Length: 130
Image (cartoon, rainbow, N blue to C red; front, top):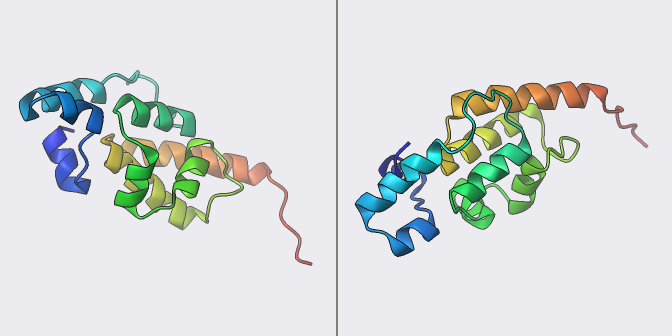
């Protein structure tokens, strides 16, 4: 995903790159950052998403503003707080929007994250109604 593609998706350009580089240089740097994560690893979890966001110089508040997902929910997503996250149908959309916003392939991230979430949620106790 190039900086141009990323900006078309969410209008986001990592501020650390843009502030010091020309548009062509920033695009080249972003292309390198997109591949900085170990691509062979197929498991996407919250901490890995966070590392990718930070590695691209993107603040969580910027992701929240662009995706319209609260920064609290985004932090829960990055912390794998599956008990505090919404139902799977909403969470799937959150993970997709988050991945696209920071410039990673949502088609790889979403299934991996959701599989981990479902596995963990299956082990959580069912809340009782009062």
